[in-house]
Image 1 (cartoon, rainbow, N blue to C red):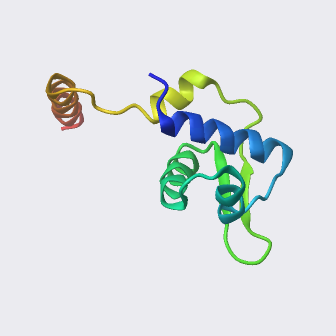
Image 2: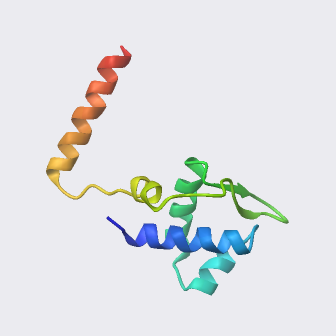
Length: 101
């Protein structure tokens, strides 16, 4: 499912392709997207090694990869839609724990 997070992540990636090193504050002002929401999105994209983050003077976000698929973004920002999804995720987590022990 294409969520608001996926749409906003796509907008950020498009901006980074044309404007590497963009600061999140500037992107949010330009795009009229809430900064707290974009901070969450940015953290997820950094954790997935899709973008890089540099703090301080001259800092900002840059692309870590040249290509990112829409399906990859959908997977990153997949949300739990029902109690059944939650049960399936919990069972999968328990199975993973059992495999590791």
